[in-house]
Amino acid sequence: MGKKVTIKTLQSMRGQDKIVMITAYDALFASLFDEYVDVILVGDSLNMSFAGQPDTLSATMDQMIYHTKAVGVGAKKSFLLFDMPFGSYTNNDMALSNAVRVYQETKADAIKVEGGKEKVDMIRFLSDNSIAVFGHIGLKPQSARGEGGYNVKGKTKDEKQSIIEDALALESAGAVALIIEGVKSDVAAAVTSAVNIPIIGIGAGNDVDGQVLVWSDMLGFFEEFTPKFVKRFIDGSGLVRNAIKEYSSEVKSGEFPNEQFRY
Ligand code: KIV
Image (tube, rainbow, N blue to C red):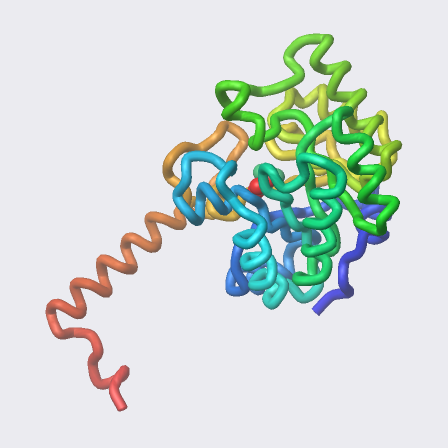
């Protein structure tokens, strides 16, 4: 097992070595991923790909804590990032009491909150209270319902400028790193050169410090829709379907369990 990845490790990788981040929701997959990634994110995307909901909004603190505890068992050396669910950080006191709960009940190294300039006070407050915070800018899935959909950001000059300002504001408030999602590549590149903290992209091109993908997307299990930026590295659902079909037909025919699988 490699050395435990800390925020210092991630900061030292900036401009030297790409940061690899993936989501995980349980101990089994976290232990499979741990050797090959730097950061494991327990994302509220679990509400869609794990719980089958149409968006991330109904994920709760209790659910996120349950999954983060499980992931913490499998993730021995990766940096462990907790995604604060919708409604769990609507004011400073609520954000701090939920973040304290995360640190007390799980092995998470940091929390992630969605938002730009409007979150500056809250991020400063959390940082002043010893909580390490990742920001999440650009396309913010927790805002998608209110905005009427998942729209690529940074298409106009003003939008690009506003995203750069978000990044600078969050950095000065004490954010230790940022996720930038669903933006034109030139926007992510401009953000990366404007700040001094690691920038991890998802659907944001390659001129960033690292990449994150949702595990069930990149392993080809989530079939509802595939965003343009997702590469399916294996056909997970196809493999599972074939295996379960074979199991079913072998049980029906009596071929399984044969001598080899009997006591
Ligand atoms: O919830 C999640 O998985 C995320 C990633 C898309 C970055 O926030």
